Image (cartoon, rainbow, N blue to C red; front, side, top):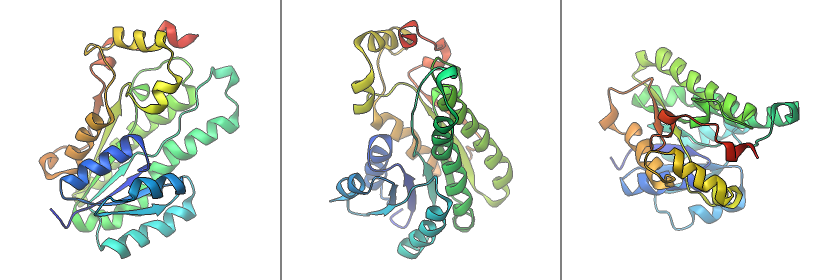
Amino acid sequence: MAEKVALITGAARGIGLATTKLMLAEGWRIAMLDRDRDELSKASTGLDGATPFFCDVSIAEHVAETIPSILETFGRLDAVVNNAGVAEFGPIEATDFAMWRRVMETNLDGVFLVSQASIPALRETRGALVNIASISGLRASTLRVAYGTSKAAVIQLTKQQAAELGEYGIRSNCVCPGPVRTKLAMAVHSQEIIDAYHDAIPLNRYGSEAEIAEVIAFLCSDKASYVTGQVIASDGGFESTGVGLPALRE
């Protein structure tokens, strides 16, 4: 287990950092990727077994340079967690093409670029891809025309990867988090929105970054050796009850 290496994008904070810490505790070595150089440096300090790599996954040249550097550092790659993402919300008529592209470049293009560049190394280890989408990719909601569409595309990309890469022993799965109690979410969610989410989620609470990390780590591990092409909503049952809350329309 000590030999296994995972690449995690968007690793400087949130779900990416929580997954990094969990997988380090489980014996993995981690390549931490992020485009926020300062936050990445802070987040990686003191994490034994983790190495930071500055990389903007939406830029093909960055990815093409970074993957070889990871392999030079670690010598192998067993799992790729495509977690990096951006969230910009607004009504359809107010979503200009520049905003649309900003969301797609990171949320979709980044997943494609990092996954494709990692395939040769994952073939060697019969490794795993885990793509992080969102509940917004499973069910339409308000103000999410770019974000939700990008995440729905990630779900389809995951299935394509599973279909085409299975012959190499590479597994590809997708995790769709529901509302998660992150610093960013708590900063932008009004009390009315928080209450509405609690009412709509069967478990009656937000999830935690650590809970999402547990699902990701499982899918990267040998415990999920016969699991591929799956879309797992880690959302407290939110997807089963629908979205589109009135409080989110305001």
